[in-house]
Image (cartoon, rainbow, N blue to C red):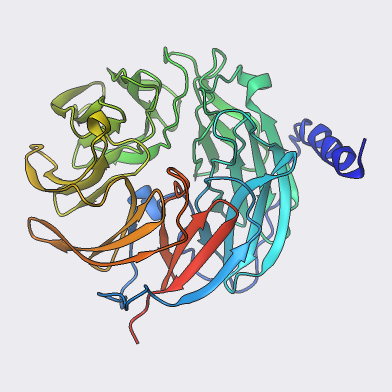
Length: 421
């Protein structure tokens, strides 16, 4: 047995122990305001507050500030807080969580569990930063907390052991929400479909066993509807809402996909929730009852079958990328009615983010497009090419923070300067 395998095996054994001892999260000195602390940023809207950005790119694209090679194999996005960048990736036998400074220099890396080696190998979960720590879900079902400054493991929980977690074909892919001292996640197991863990210790706060179905690949959102704070996500066959204080199931709506790819983070606005799944399932708008005890379908469109791309809501307009029947369209529809305002068939399958009046669209083989948002749609104004890769290589969603556009491509992380001079 090689030294590398021995070290990896020892790390996995060490991680299998669940620490339930309380800890005090160290507070970094003179911490900068958190800019993009979790998947899709603050409140998970995927809307960056950045301004002063380029409205057009020069030929060849914006200047490259730096490129870091060493992220490992994976599809995790980046989160950014306290002057640090966090992501995760497979390195040999282990999945590693890593931190960089804003100049792209490595600060630390720590194991979060065994590497995912089955369908589509690689990391999935973007580290969630909160109060001096980062939290990550390993695709094999381990939740771990790390000191953000040093990478020291603070605690870890095996969701399979504790809740009989049941992931899908592609493992567990959820990006964790941390709020009010709790870490929320969906093990999808008989002993806990959706659970809340104590942020400081990893101990179970509550575990919902009312929900019928197992976990999908969806990252949730937490919203307040008429005074009720609720966690909303998709299981393999439904859309569900849970009271964040008690874990009680508030409402559930059937949403069985044609292919098991319920992955889109729900979009909430003014009592309505948009959800979608890929491969001809389509997208639906739901309306939550005033008492949050039920929800009903307002409209459904089979051609809005968003899979991995993410959706963006701006001024009542819903933007997303559909892939119905193998064809692809980038769409802009009215959020409340589902009426098409504009559609484009040239962009293909793209992952999205937004900042300063522009939508950034990352194609799954490396084409990056800049779209100006218009009153009834959009206009493609700039484009550049990253190294051409096989389909579905560029699955991590782009991130805009601190005047930079961050793009993860497997082992590489690019940081482009997109500020106006």
